[in-house]
Amino acid sequence: MRSGTIDPKGILAILGKTEGNGCVNDFTRGFTSHVLKHAIAGWTGRTLEDVTRNVALVMSGGTEGCLSPHLLVFEVREEGAPGGPAAASLAAGVAMTREFAPEEIGRMPQVLATAAAVKDAMDKAGIRDAADVHYVQVKCPLLTKQRIAQAYERGQTVVTEDTYRSMGYSRGASALGIGLALGELKAEQIADEIVCRDASLYSGVASTSSGIELMENQIMVLGNSTQWSGELVIGHGVMRDSIDTAAVAAALEQVRIPVAVGLSEAGRDRIAAVLAKAEPSRSGEIRGRRHVMLDDSDVQASRHARALVGGVLAGVFGDTQLFVSGGAEHQGPDGGGPVAVIAARA
Image (cartoon, rainbow, N blue to C red; front, side, top):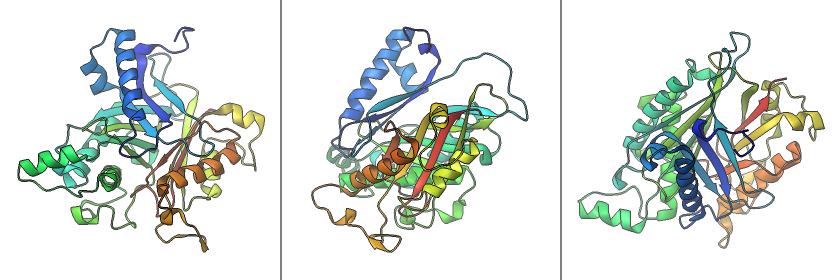
């Protein structure tokens, strides 16, 4: 910002990887969001409420293995003419749901509210066709003992009393909402009892991350649109498992970067961001070989998965500044997840 590269008034969203544990008590997410929210308000003269309602601050905890803590700042400027039919450019839209009551987290109210907000964000981004959406990032809440007690005091139940498992339910319900909004799933397929239970239902572009620092869902839709100009484009693939580099190749091909074992310097120079989900397969196997991520009583499985997928992607991209988020309930097939690449146009 000091050099004029970024105009703080145009900041639409900030995605960040913080170096906490990514679990319920990971306060690095909340601290970072707090600092950024106040900083943006100070830089722009906006109120904290205005920043909260209009800027998506998605902090994903956990930089295990080779992953590097970093921030991705999305800034929008009104300049130039739209790209036209032959030159769709990166488009982004942000929307927020209302705040959820603790008893709504992980259940249909969260699914339906997320679906409505995704459609709102698509409209703001000028993306008319769901096929042009390549990544939907959601920051969603979780349950704490205090929030659970509040629900019980009002005579309500909650989806789980396990605060860690509540993170998965919140992520899963949010992902199902994305799939519903984009037509990947039908309304009759989704109900409270299938959240985090039917792994065959998923969105191929959903990335959801839960945290203690909010009670609403913050949504950012990324895609390509002819209503936007700019040098950036986005592509995605769906990893079938944690080592599926073919899906990474598919994402690279969509942004017209030659696929190789280890990108060329020219290819690396074009990469602006890499976004991915990571999840250990429920089967306990990867391509017929046993893994022990789900049996480790000392280190939670999603932390293993982030390190694994981060290492696989770092080997391809030659960079460790990767937005790899753990916990992929209903976000890609079991043990896999979406991967997206934002790059400068060829």
